[in-house]
Image (cartoon, rainbow, N blue to C red; front, top):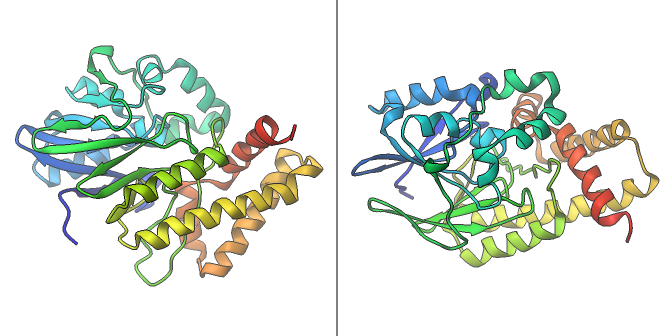
Length: 303
């Protein structure tokens, strides 16, 4: 299958195939889906230079959502001239990221700078806020955003020529180069929501893409398997929660139980330690433990 986009590997934390940016050429420059984090700007700059482009050639950046691994460099790229397209719920936090950075700081602590680098505000005049299903037209490129919460309330998937750029609502699936298939769900605080994710999955099915392209790390053409795998994972997560959470485990105990659960899935799918490390780099299990704990307390504990 041929595509009108190129995959740029940002080699996050020196681990390949963990965070991608997707490049689209048009008559006035290039557009990107995702900016990557601030810490990977040098890798982005080199990937562009290898293709004959500079940062100033980026006219537009379409963000699936505003988490640091997807949107951290957007403010920097806006200062090079790019227009930043972002979900209406996320836009205020790109203009003034103070609350976003405080929230991220609670999660990452003293790892913030090493992992993510600088997160600069996006000047308001460089922000464009498309609505659900409102086409974004850039030269001869046409993108359609689909409101897809579950991973985050401020999440868009983008349809482009029948291909779905699924951000994180499409799960984390790394290219393993063999017949092994393994998908995980990124479930960070504060907005992981199981039921909304199911609704978003139904929306992805309705879009009937010919390929699905998660930021971590596509593309994949076995769309039916991929979407079914998301559904299986959602079912498994629900079962895990119902088995583990009524005993009110501490966050440390929950992390241990979730680690063991993930390792069981590794064994089922034939995932070796090196591949597990790559998955943990893209989607750390401890972060999902915090997201599950918050979701249970806020939405399920009182039921």
